[in-house]
Image 1: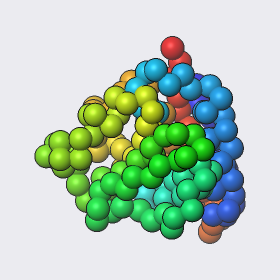
Image 2: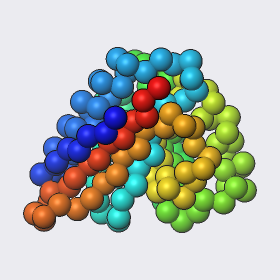
Image 3: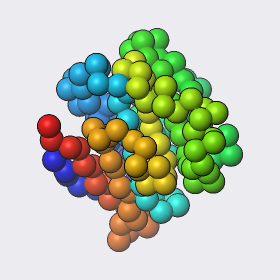
Image 4: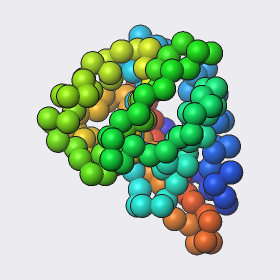
Length: 153
């Protein structure tokens, strides 16, 4: 299944993320491993903005920035009793980095939600049931297009 959404501002992108969270939490069986979202798109296309809205909807109050230099940030949602992992592979996607971060262990745990910027760099390492989001610049200056693809079982 796939669908395309249009955002006209960063606020709209974050609202889409919050609505997306409500939808996936209602439908996701938590026994298949982590919920994995692979985000793709050019620089400045809205990936981090979407993730910021997504993570905030879990009650996280911390300032949410992209972990471009750290590769990973980890958050705990007391309301959902789960960990959220935000990966950014813009600068790295080496197997060594993944091993150090215990990436395999993280994506196998059904209590985790994993958001990955530049996920195309590790596409072959992600589960088949990962949800793919592609971000594009729209025709207007602040417009973004978000294509969401889920795999039907």
